[in-house]
Image (cartoon, rainbow, N blue to C red; front, top):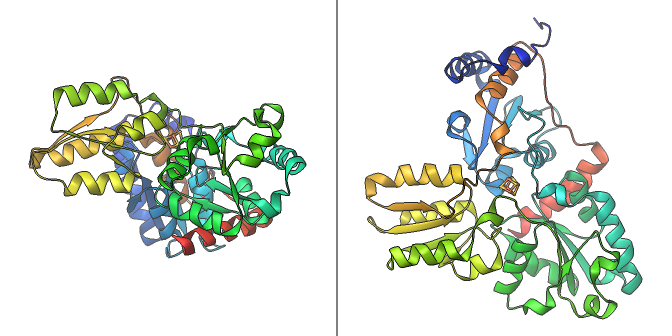
Length: 365
Ligand code: SF4
């Protein structure tokens, strides 16, 4: 029988240990009606409850094959939107804290992208010459924009393949919202840096001349990840001075200077696989989110591998950190009582267009 919704303030001051016990009790009650997906950047206190873990691409691939009635997402808002778009209509996707957004995703919004479309259309025929490519770290309405304009979604795993697809459709790409992933992927394809100018959506004509737009191969949206921008070449230089035999591995959301000075660059799944499969006793400097690196360092200790975080300052994704044991316990207890809280539901017309681009991406990758 359904009861009144349990208010979050009852959980606000709850101790972590109490919440852990309450999460387990609610899970027991929900049984197979519930599945929990956890992104690698989540803190261990909630990550341990995930049935499936992964980066954005891996988690999105799970979504259309899950049977559970409730999908609880330990991640940020755009990831829960993707889960809603790819799951069946009757399934309910829940984000334990609605304030868990992504600062990078927020750097592009539909109004700015549509204004950019209008401005670029003054210089060239957008729909004939530009493939819009959005990183999966973006709101559903931007994925829908790409669906409407012959574009596609990419992740950090498949970005180079997706760019190839984009160029097979049209001669140029507008890449948003992460300039660093776009630049690194384009560079790996052999595109000169001067043909990948930054498009600043807050300036008239993106801050570019008509000639610069015509000469560009990729227009890079002026956006970045606040976590990955903290890593510096100096961090790499210091590590190499201390450990000349060590290796450096970075996520492509880091700045170009960091990527080019790393031995390996790739998605979180790639980072996990590369370090896990490396020789026992090897030494690694890792440029990605702190929770992932801390977990990896612990896992690698029995093999005597040194796994060092790239920055001296804490680079945790603060929005991911909003998903804590208190919010997870609160939403699971409500679900166990038949109360749906924090459901993520993408409007149908948006979901349809966004799904088109996600399906394109899954087919290409
Ligand atoms: S790490 Fe960066 S890109 Fe990833 S969710 Fe956090 S803010 Fe967004």
